[in-house]
Image (cartoon, rainbow, N blue to C red; front, side):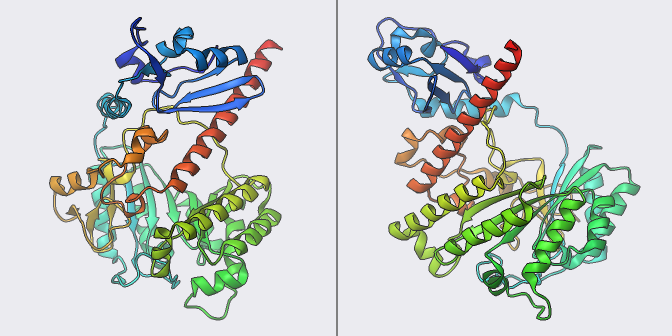
Length: 450
């Protein structure tokens, strides 16, 4: 048996090697993923992050009696029949939180420059919310808040909206004030990129320290222009946004393109993938991914309709495969740490700041669930605790290989439910990561032997 990846901290620190008990019958841990390869069978433990390769003879031994492969037991790939896999996983998550130094201060800020937007997307979750721009006075207070709460450390800022470029002056102002105070920073942005012209790209690179932009494309020219429904009528928005994407890439700023897929645009997105491949194929710093959209109105009903949901997910898998063939997807890999948190919402070092100066914990909550204000010292401990509350486990959790990395926050609507298609997609992603890591392992070993 070859050990491709060893057990990670804190798993190894806390448990070490598992002792073999002569009177126990063993089974594979629920969190073990199998992947056949030419040389045998890969096993990956999503809890301990260890991966091993078994030969064909060892696979036969595993299938007959796991105790004949004691190393599998020692490395926690196999456990006694009565073992509580889920409990151990939750304990590991808690230990990971304790071991990792929490750090002092707040060093990640999602700043809403405005809740207004120059597009009118039919699926926007912010529809109906007040359209409020951040004032210059508030922007100055935001900079003061960052300076006073970053504990002298470098900070990461994500510019958000609405459309963040719809109120570009406050970005420039906040960045200037941070520089003048000696605060190191870098930034990213979620934008439709309509306003990301050449002059803005230059300023973003030089002054905003912009490193990455996420842009959503809903389809080819006709579908995109219709679904975005920009307030401007004199310019072809689709061509404008693609041109601005090129400007960003030419400046060395990474672009992550998100393709929202639903019942109606799935086939058109395949055409868009081909167009993106022709225009951006081979470009560094550009990646494309797809996300099932069950946003509003009839699409909310679609996610609860098993057949419609299966249709959307099947189309998404087809789209992702096309994107992989075109070389537009991000490289796959395996996670090499025990996950202790889900996102900014349950991370004490992250906050959102709204145009009104209110402080929140999640960009999806732009009009409620605030935990503070930039004019007041301290944050609401009860509100922060609420963002960390978890959904109860469902029956599928007990045998889900993704469970060790699945943190279902109660206030997150995106993960309120877990469907079989979600679990299948996660499993496929793990297997792709296993294959990629194993190829890398073989290549490194070949280079050493040479």
